[in-house]
Image 1 (tube, helix red, strand yellow):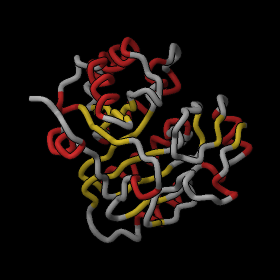
Image 2: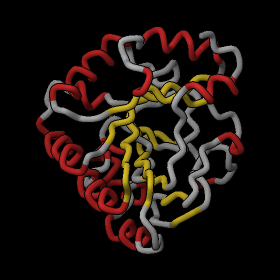
Image 3: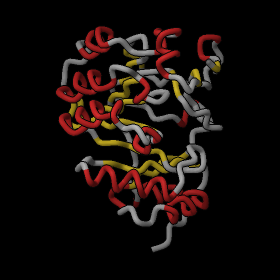
Image 4: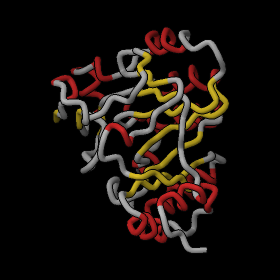
Length: 235
């Protein structure tokens, strides 16, 4: 059946509405054009962690923020930046998982293609142990190739890790083009997201967002806010 409008699309496809978003880092090793997050972009994650520790959520701060939530969380989303750059991401996932029915790890997924995967073995084990769902960005903005995605999905299936593919595009035509490039993925594994062009269009979690400072806020940290602390910098 043909999809004709955005409203129709939203009714037919899986959308994503987490109750809690946890921003574990403001660092990323990609510089995707159109990203709303005010990231510090650095290839060397260890270096940026050493030089800019304030860009990484501390476990104590996360624990304090979670203690402000007095009921069980239905869906939590762990984001960045790129959350896998956090050296304690496995620990943070283990703290969030017992409090939520579902936890998504939102990632560009390049780490799943690493030739040397040994540094990520602990993370993979934490994902499996805590039943984390890996949410992979696949669209023009993030630039992951079809062949790369196929390899990633094969790897996740081999390790019995659940996943979702998030397609963020600015129009139905662009969505259809991107969807055709991952036609080997079943519909129930696809999440459609309209690209946000303003703060009003960003996901609004019902509980709120825990930012990298460990503050529980009502909205996401984003570039649409014109404040000095949210400038994009390169390290």
